[in-house]
Length: 279
Image (tube, rainbow, N blue to C red):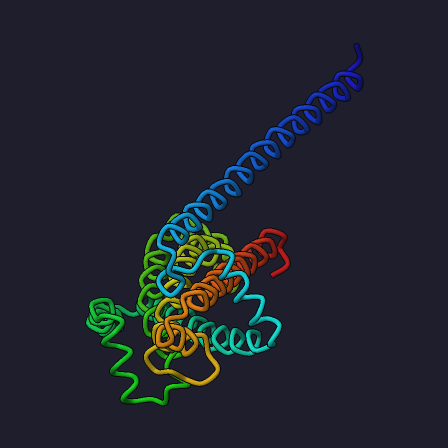
């Protein structure tokens, strides 16, 4: 057998191995998706049985009643504007916190005195309860800005701490190698600092995004700004409309899930551009 024939045979074997691995991976994903669907159905059945056993809609609405309520709100056309208002404000606070947290973490990494200056502030923010923050900011700011400021305030320390930790754990040998080979500061930032801090940034973003939604919606429930999810949750509580309450809660979960997926997609796209050398 010639060398060329051996190489072709080896290539075929590798392709066959890759194909088998892809098939196995697809089967595993398919099984996981089936399990996820059945787990959702299981809890929906438990929910329905609990609602039927209580038989008091104002205490616990069934999934069917919640679905009917959601369809009714969609047909009225009010759900989109309300959902967008809350989505825009909470994400505005989240993204502002990401920018501020990243910027201050870089300054703390670069200047020791700045880190010492920031430590009491970060410790205080972490210790203060969400309710105290909301009530205090409600005194200082208008209710329509409350969810923006509260979500910013709650997300900021998480982003700051994670980014600072990531910067502190950058491989020193890579920095020394970059200095030896006289790599430009921009490339050093992109290919050393950014590439090693990205995992910390991703974990901070996914963890704090859920907190941004929780604190932002809580701020809306207390501040009651017009045309937001929070005020509709408050009205549902006042009128004992648990179907509406669950309907808006499911919408919050969906919006939080989609915003998290968009955030992760943005990070993966950015990593792809770095690995492809397009930045």
